[in-house]
Image (cartoon, rainbow, N blue to C red; front, top):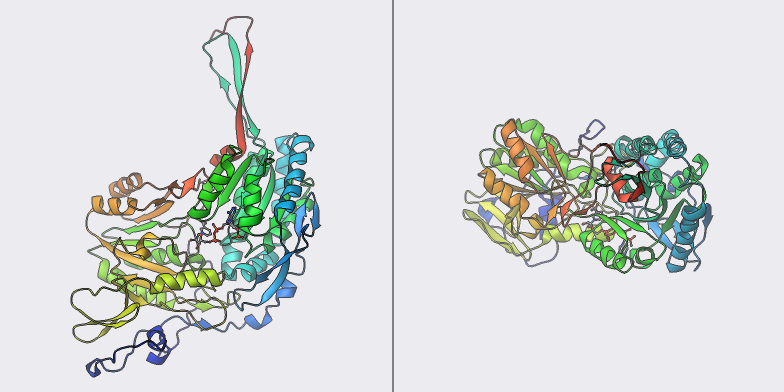
Length: 576
Ligand code: NDP
């Protein structure tokens, strides 16, 4: 996805003392002296945190003025039974911006009880699909009217650039509710051609109480991917929002009531996974669990749902390949491969985090990708920037850990100086290339920016090998790993060697190659000559350890419906 706003670059002329390289050297570790023949350590400029001119205008209390930081149960905003609350932080400043009611098992019981009653005896399931569709359309309209307020809440809570909240997250939620409002009166079964004297047909019926457990990276959009199809099908919903980002969904709960969603049909529980989330999965009143998040927690969800033999759909992690073929226009492809990874600070399950570049283009691609990453602006997400902070300190530590990780191995032709985890890599002619991790070369970035807020530098590794952790594991941060390939068979094998299978991109002018690679990849989505092109009508989900079931599109209706066969005898023999 192209960034929706014009890009303004914030170059700062960098000296060695301001570079991340300097930060490696200034950690107090024992570092061999740099041979004098290399001269002063001057590396290319890096993106830096910028003081946004609008940042001073951001008033969290004002942005959150309409959000009630409570649980939404049976149409009322209530405190947790325990009276407990938890703090929500501003990722820009690490300041507490709200204390939110913390749900646990007792609250889960209340919310599921309300959803169960609303499903079993309330009007929602029994009203016509057209009526449900009208309510969902109204809800989309109400959200659209307040889109700017929601965009600002999302940016404050998550740290994503306001341009992204305005141009992607919130409009997508609006369109997703409209899309499923349209489906609500078109959910029907089939008339069956039987082999007996019977008249048989199928009904597609609401599955019941749906538990939705969502992550923090696209908070309101993840809510929409679960709630819009569930509500369209006539299910009732208990939503467990991520503890980092509960605010936009809570305000959305107000809109749902205003739009005419009956009490008990849409319930919201802020709280923690191991307490509220696990209790929700295990609750006997829940019929279906729809989850997005890490593969590790996805396994927990399956275990928790097993006793009750509940329906489960999982959208999990990814390590998606972005494959650049020979003969493409490098200028646009470098840009698209950059967006494929760096959008949302790299905190996206489908992020194109393994950039496979054909050997004929590799060196030029790397140079351009590095130049592009260095131009990326990082700073206050309310300003005109491309990357804001990561969501929280845990994510920051995880991403920095990957940047540092591994035992460095020198590539032939390089002179390396060890600094604990990292090597400084020089060409034999003495010019500095970068910092090495596990034998890969950090071409730019690699460090935290500042000491307040969860900002990190856009980072590009070249010379990455498949066995390195940065090439295998989901980093979920702004770290691009660029690898070289030679033959189509080889790149398909390597792309498919990942245990994940969520998404992939391929850039080529050769239609046969596009078809061959699209069919050869074991992933849920292949973008050809584009990346991150999401659409309400296109299914999204994974193969292998990226999960099962599909969000979005007509296929999402299968997550929230049961199929019932109805068979009656025919008095006259069937003639067809
Ligand atoms: P998690 O998978 O831990 O969390 C996702 C959701 O599940 C949150 O609401 C979380 O609650 C909840 N949860 C956690 N444990 C349980 C449990 N035992 N039972 C039920 N629900 C539970 O993701 P994180 O936020 O911790 O992120 C960790 C990593 O996961 C990231 O670095 C990234 O690699 C990956 N991830 C993948 C995403 C994707 O879209 N595929 C999205 C987000 C993360 P809580 O509020 O306590 O976190």
